Length: 372
Image 1 (cartoon, helix red, strand yellow):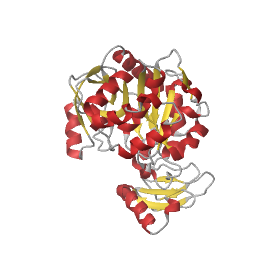
Image 2 (cartoon, rainbow, N blue to C red):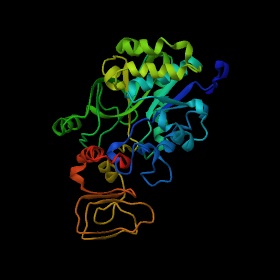
Image 3 (cartoon, one colour):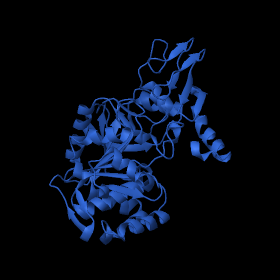
Image 4 (tube, one colour):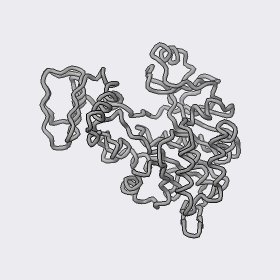
């Protein structure tokens, strides 16, 4: 999809599948590596040689041509997006003036796509997932696209759970025994449960993890928006003639100032009855915390995740993250996080990871905003 904003001429490619990458979060749980100035989606936290954003773009390229990508992000990250995906035109980066969760993000992208290519299908994906089996992942996405074609169905991708993880949302299936690769109607959504409930979900065999990846036609999504979030629908729909025009940016600022913050899951998917889930088992993780990074990283014999040249003595179960070339020596720590961002050193028990938010707020209170 090429958007030429001059004279509002839109040239749409024959491929009618679009990928919307949501890249507006600040990744505060990965502090002090992730900062407001450069959040985790723009970092190579996994040490793969690619940032999360770049890896997400390349993951969908077998399905979606470059011209059919949109990245929705905060306006302050526009240049970072274009730096990391230089294949995109500036018009393919949609800038939110302020974060309002995923429903307004998806709505903005849907209206922009609809202005260029009525009848299109769209994939909506976060920018910061780990996918180990990308070939199988592409197969699941393609199956989902085929399933919603020429229908009013909305699709989400569910993941067969490997543990009662309380950091993920859960999807209850109407039919069981659909993993991997099967499709069934969704019975219920449940946001991050407590441990006892998560254990019951996994034991029942009726639930999948919610990946937060959605597939639908633009028309179907806009109808769902009108039905379940009518105020939001009214705001975006009222400026339909101006998507792609010079007036778009100012109108989006006005919309977001009035738009409430709500997720796609809560605002639409939990309420709709035409939601289906395709079960995947392709090595997925929402790498959202230091704990999840520890879980999905290779470990030494003592269970440490650390640079190969780190000197660790009497140390077990630790994650050590330091700048490349920095020599690190750790003695006598068990189950700790040792994270050096260059200007901040954080040493904290892994079990107290929830305190990172408090650290950040305390530093802001002390006037040290430059390090958060």
